[in-house]
Length: 506
Image (cartoon, rainbow, N blue to C red):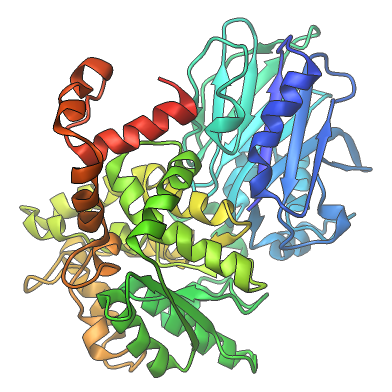
């Protein structure tokens, strides 16, 4: 989980640029570098590195002797870089997986380079021969990327909004859309000609890189990208438990002696997620860790979570608080960097309860596609921010391109809920395999912030009860005057909004 930052065509001072670039330093705790680009006026790039793959040669901006006109900034991991290196007979200068991007860009251009990558990525290529800059982002937006363009010829890009929000430019900061790439020409004075992102991949289409690798979709193969390290797993719900069990199985197949580590969090040892995770851990033989937190600890974390997420959205903040605390614990008390998660399964396999209400299987498919196209703004954003804030990096096997394109092209009625059970087909696929306990396999969907609660009360209900005494009725009544846009409807919403405004302004 690295942090990238780039600014072109802005007349502000180097001091202002450096100040903004350093706002995402938490994403790369191992090393950082800030550079002015030779031959380009009014340009600066920065990279904050979290070391996962590659030695010192993985530092960025990456410039290869073979292509001195190309500079690369990439936050991501490319899983098939060795396959592509062998297929096209590329001679690597470094041992970094991201180097493959420069070779592909040079030979095929930016669009095909993006299509051939199997991985999670957000990258920027600066091409001084063609006088252009290219941005690209993976199909599900697992790696974040924001950008701003102005009529005055400014282009800014960053892994998080906070690295762009105080630049002296006029222009709205936007998500760079997943599965898209964009080229912008750079003029001699360093100004950039604005452009529009173009799609390079539809999520229901088989990815282009499959022609260079054998597709394996048996149960255990959706975690084929795990074996570089022995990564810990979150555990508790169905999706994370399946990933944990498959990971443990895969590690045993590869002769890894150390047991898989699993982590769960709750407000006490009787939280439903904690109990479920404990059963799964015993079943798969993992080294299990249970973390508990109090209401006071949750309240204390809220401010950091809002700054980390860059939002006051209630549905994003509620589950992020326990996730943030859990990631903080893993970062402080272990030497783990990679974390396996079950993100994406609910969207791909129709796991939310409202899928039970879809009129037809085709409607369920459309809703699944809609949620996958927006996942980068919700679950993926939440897990990225909570892990990146503590120098961790996620792997989400259920968002593997090969798996999702295969699953989404199965008949719609096969993927629809059955007998009042959401995510039925995915559950049935593992039935009888003794992968996880049967009661976990068929456990009803429960929100994360609900599962970590205590005494039948969810974490956010405890929070709401506390806020009743913290925010007066008169203060809440004045909210409509203070916040005319997206006026808070509850004391909880007002509490989050007040913190957000202090951090980011209106």
